[in-house]
Length: 374
Image (tube, rainbow, N blue to C red):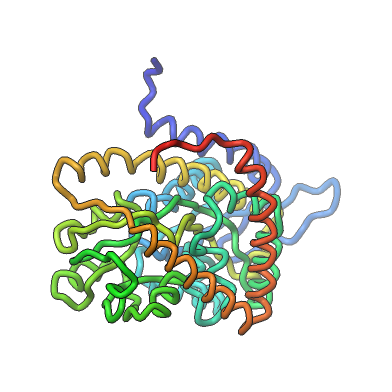
């Protein structure tokens, strides 16, 4: 057995995957504070580059897997560059609202931000397709679509038109289907239900008669406790537990139909991105790719122990009735088709994602054994 602690091993992994690129960056580039060095010709020593960026985040860094991943990315970047590349993380609302990060980056109020692109739904209809899709791809299939399919190219095309450069920087598995005060057995139980829900999943519940609202995570416990809402979804069991949901909405439903994957992006102001040395760009991309790997592993690894404790403590964990789940699937499909009909960019991204999903499904069905458990 190794004498290294898990935390040291995790940090070593993150630093290892970034070190080679960062070493190259530091060997060839350095930045004066607030300025970018000009490119040097052959035979001349290139000016070195340092980076000091304020970075607002959409999720509290005290939240495991959901929020703390950006700290792993920040630390790997700083330590691997001996402090030359630094991200100063600001908690939600400290300098920018959690729901307004990409707009602040676009306007260059901050150089970059770490966020969920689904929050851009009002400004960019196709954005939720890059963040979470009801009954959509598995996390690993989303990674394949992003890196090996057309996902990254499409996201860059859409966001470059807005003066933004998105980098996939985090990924977690399915959320729960939500925390409820009373049982939800049929579609009729959703009618008039006051619930916090995000993205395309929220539109699906609205189509079934629910009263959907968006509330920041930090305000959800109080909203549930005071009865401002009857139910909420937010994130993984380990996150929802930390926010106290079992104490005020004791029925927890699965599966997380609305977000089989949840992707997070480092969104950079495009002008600032273009002003960086290529080695610095590569260092940011490599740190984020390492963050995606660590984030998905952490999100999967933490849930079993929490669910075991829920069972011991009497949390009422339930699976949605199959008929209700099928109703949700039908409603979600209708919402996706309506969004595609209303916006050509949404239609293009959605069609590409569906084509990839269909091809991937052949491999998925053949390659992976299916459990006999329900």
